[in-house]
Amino acid sequence: MTSANGRKSIFITGAASGIGAETARHFSKRGWFCGLYDVNEMGLKAVAGELGSENCHLARLDVTRRADWAAAVEGFGAATGGRMDVLFNNAGIGRHGWFEEVPPEDSDLVIDVNVKGVINGVYAALPLLKATPGARIVNTASTAGIVGAPQLAVYSASKWAVRGLSEALDAEFRDLGIRVTSLMPWFVDTPILDMGKTDGSNEKMSDQMKAGGATIYPVSLAAEKAWEAAHGDDIQVMVGGEAERARFMTRWLPGLVRKQIKARVPPRG
Image 1: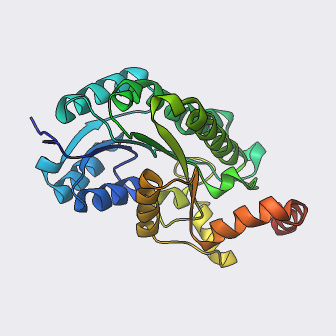
Image 2 (image 1 turned 60 degrees about the horizontal axis):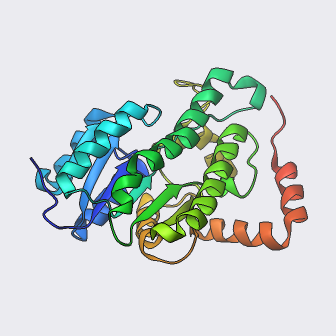
């Protein structure tokens, strides 16, 4: 069986692509042992092939299923000697479109993955985190978790929830020696930008963004910031200059931000 052999370790959900995969590469290059988890098994195997089988443990994980979490954490703990330096709750999905046009079942799934998946992860990983001095939880939220995003209403709500959960747990876990941080990306060049109102929809968020000239940051920046979130003192780590500006504006000029957001909402077709 693959073993961490005393190396620091990170457990990554959504590791088959995007921020999760790039974070695995970033940490692995710095000598960390990586746990790779996703529903996309082919993607996981591709990432594991890049890292080398001796540097990672992988398993299929549906973050909405507690049984999957229990099995994945058990396998990870066996490989790391019962330690977990960082839990990176990164798996997430979204649906883009007018609220009434997104099927309720899809909105349910966004909440199940983005919110309940994170909560499930904390419950499952807490014993290993408690056993690891200086452990961290990094939860991927979003700039949509500080600025309500039209046509991303439920996704935005889910990321506000993740940010709130992270802040509460950072205080609550103080006596356990576990820090909890939110990673707050602006738009990053990942598959989630191809979200539509439903799976397979031809109406993609990325098309609207490109037409509007929106800034999209490279996934490598998000991985660098994930490293910062795992090592720094900030409770929120923003990804990209636009994210930093959004945080500043919502703190000091919230009325102006709301006015600008409403002005930019496209007309219904």
